[in-house]
Amino acid sequence: MSEVKIPYKIYLEESEMPTQWYNVRADMKNKPAPLLNPGTLEPMTLEELSQVFCTELAKQELDDTNAYIDIPEEIQKFYKMYRPAPLVRAYCLEEKLQTPAKIYYKFEGNNTSGSHKLNSAIAQAYYAKKQGLKGVTTETGAGQWGTALSMACAYLDLDCKVYMVKVSYEQKPFRREVMRTYGASVTPSPSETTEIGKKILAEHPGTTGSLGCAISEAVEVAVNTEGYRYVLGSVLSQVLLHQSIIGLEAKAAMDKYNITPDIIIGCAGGGSNLGGLISPFMGEKLRGEKDYRFIAVEPASCPSLTRGKYAYDFCDTGKVCPLAKMYTLGSGFIPSANHAGGLRYHGMSSTLSQLYDDGLMEARSVEQTAVFEAAQQFAKIEGILPAPESAHAIRVAIDEALKCKETGEEKTIMFGLTGTGYFDMVAYQRFNDGEMSDYIPSDEDLKPGFASLPDVHK
Image 1 (cartoon, one colour):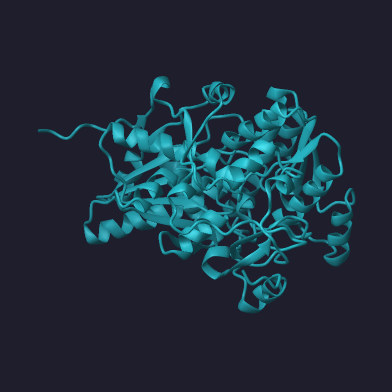
Image 2 (image 1 turned 120 degrees about the horizontal axis):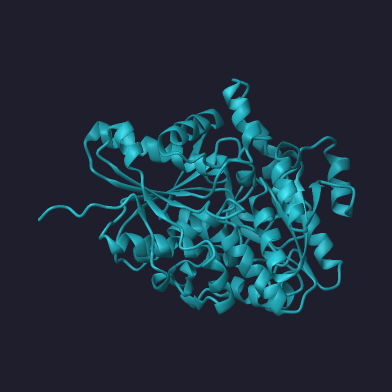
């Protein structure tokens, strides 16, 4: 019997789209450690979390028992504007590499925001609207999350206040303008508009900012503005829940053609796309049904998994958010101004941190110039200009495919292509002009961040 020819792009039918999100925590033997109140160091309650987040989202954040949660009909309707997203067989890349490996990527860039972030943005905006709020505040690194949230808020007629990491605000003016076009206000962070921003600027004059700084400012505005709540684009368990739509679709598409991946690769900043991509596959591994190799790829300039400490830490630089047990470089760590803005975060999702600590997932750090070499190679061969964040996964996918070439193993590799890089042309320009350099923090550089870790023994 001849082998079934796999299409270049596998799309699910509308009737095959998932109607529930998958909560991987339900199948984890070792649950992620609870968020702690920074004042009492006791686990955060629903009432406490609801002062910062929408109540329904706070419930999702605390839920580690329900494996499946229904996707509200209005969110399903919104998803259908740009989902299902294609699972693509990278035939051209396989041929160019002359590898026996089969390579697939789940492409999340087919929407105006240009990335996977819209999957959670619409969910969080929906619950804010349902609660009767006026608007939401948030942070954004490279701008994909801010762009996605501004789109979702425009769709639901909510106000949106975005604090954008200053270096990205300056490097990516066009993404900033997309947010403003959708009606969001965009402020470079750290700024003089908040007390925390002023304090950070006083302590770090001329800083290019970080996601930790921007989170602090957005939270301050949310808790001090009536009718507003804070929403976050990564890290939190609720975000990984919403992003499970990525992995659920990918698995359904693979099952349709009896494809089983050996290696699943995703870039890792706070953990949203990686957690979403691997969740249903990780669930099978946790239940003992199948085995997969998972690789988280992070920038060498901000190596929270590969060089961080597994400890309770503040999620933000201003130390106003709950404490999370995670792999972290310390909330006081200010990453270098690398061009993968969405990966410039000092910590990692508590869920992914627990899975990594349990040995269920690998982590690898890669340098910036090698990442852009892979991005350029992929653009030339597959015809999509990838986001710098996604290019981290591409780098390792290519490396794994070349290993298969050496060994002759016919492994199946899948990676997440989180979005497009058309608003990242300053980065590509620097690479093309030979002006891009690599920065790897020394152990001495990491000491101040580790010194900022709170003394929590739980």
